[in-house]
Image 1 (cartoon, rainbow, N blue to C red):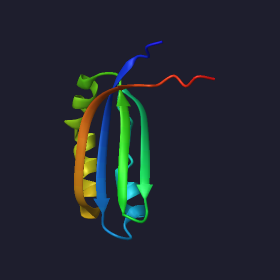
Image 2: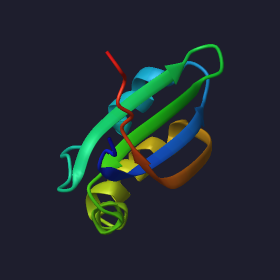
Image 3: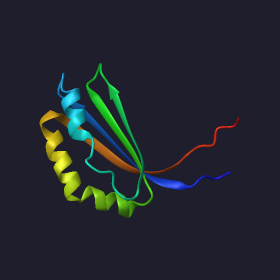
Image 4: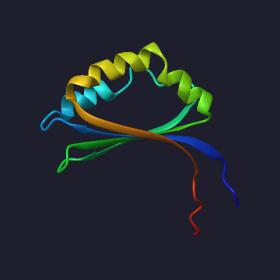
Length: 99
């Protein structure tokens, strides 16, 4: 059975050592945007790496948020803690796990 397809935005950031709690406060958006279906934060303490994964109902919704003032403020708040960043946009779908 084919599942619905989503836009998936994955961002990986290497943060300054010892800055996780400050980064996390800055990373969390003030409001969750229309079109965002789910969001995940994954942290690897041994590498000071944070991966954000969000699923969206459309590429247009993700792009509206990326260009919004809310996202610009959030990125500015995170900047002092980020050493490097990569991101990508993907199409994905949930896999059905047989029971």
